[in-house]
Length: 159
Ligand SMILES: CCCCCCCC(=O)SCCNC(=O)CCNC(=O)[C@H](O)C(C)(C)COP(=O)(O)OP(=O)(O)OC[C@H]1O[C@@H](n2cnc3c(N)ncnc32)[C@H](O)[C@@H]1OP(=O)(O)O
Image (cartoon, rainbow, N blue to C red):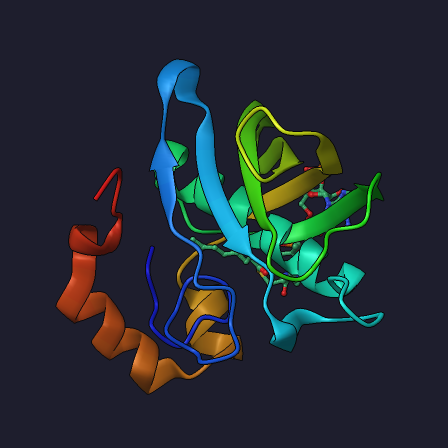
């Protein structure tokens, strides 16, 4: 689901500008290029921004494969190698299982190419929610407009 104000996939200037495609064996691929706006230590990606990229990639995996609204309940990250500014992180994510409303997903991010060195691994639990989760806690008017103008069309699989 593409929301233009989303920090992960939207058009926010300092955002991550991530796009997602679904590949073979239901592996969901995302890319994130680290810019000057994403630094923690000088010249290196901030860990929280990397976690954000994985939240986005894993959320997109849930959205693209299950097409059910869900939110992150738990997100774990292993930071294995530093990710320098200018690097593109290639994230491959998988759906590991579903148990009732609980959705388990995991991903790994590689440096520079789809077969580069692993820099980050992540696992998450998403919890399926009703649309009222967003209207109750978020901008209800904006969400209703977003829903009525997009419906199915913003689930962009391999645009
Ligand atoms: C394309 C879109 C990309 C989007 C990418 C970005 C996604 C996001 O960042 S979403 C924003 C961040 N997340 C949030 O704001 C969520 C805030 N949390 C909540 O709203 C609630 O805690 C919520 C909805 C997760 C769960 O609450 P609720 O609906 O009452 O369900 P609840 O009964 O507590 O939990 C359901 C099940 O999940 C389990 N669960 C919930 N949270 C956790 C957790 N942190 N760890 C382990 N298990 C958990 C519960 O134990 C329960 O399991 P069971 O069914 O076996 O008893």
